[in-house]
Image (cartoon, rainbow, N blue to C red; front, top):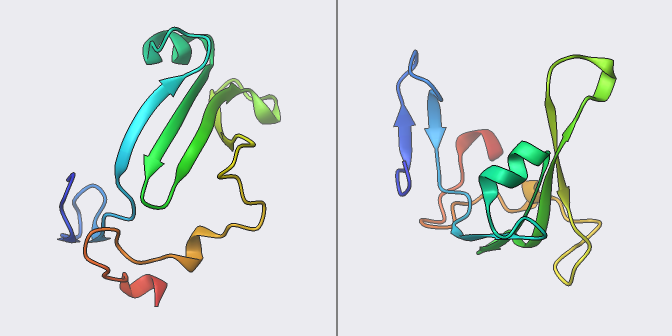
Length: 106
């Protein structure tokens, strides 16, 4: 699905309209020696996105929020030159490839 835009049939996983909202490169950063598997096992993966919309450093952090036994993961935008407290991704609904706006976002 890397470059796929279109409609997945009802009953299929992810059924509905599909666009490529963003694209770019991913880079593991932080103290894990650039080993994503080790970082995930340890519960914190720090990474940088070099996309057309999302840029800068992020972290995925394992939590046990709510006291449950199930693993939960928190996605956090790190404070860097790309951090914008008032950023709302819903203001940029168009595909990064085609410019198409999904019906549900119109």
